[in-house]
Length: 120
Image (cartoon, rainbow, N blue to C red; front, side, top):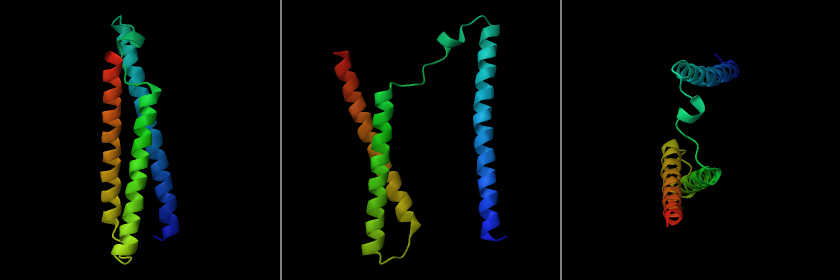
């Protein structure tokens, strides 16, 4: 199988998988709400609040992307200058994960500090 057909097959499979995942989530959410209505519960009140305020989501996403970008940049610099273009993909994945995790930790500490200040 040549690469053109393989790329087309991957696009089709990923698209179908994404559609199935979104459809499954919506279907299960609807089933849960219908079961709550049958039991006499109000689905708008009884469902847990999973959404945070927009500022914390933006902060978390921003720090994650900054950390991942910094990890990718440092991995490129190490690969280009220190390893003389060996193209070791493990460095890229490891540093993206490490710096992305550091970004999430920084976001957690900032949100925790902000929540403590709100309580006072």
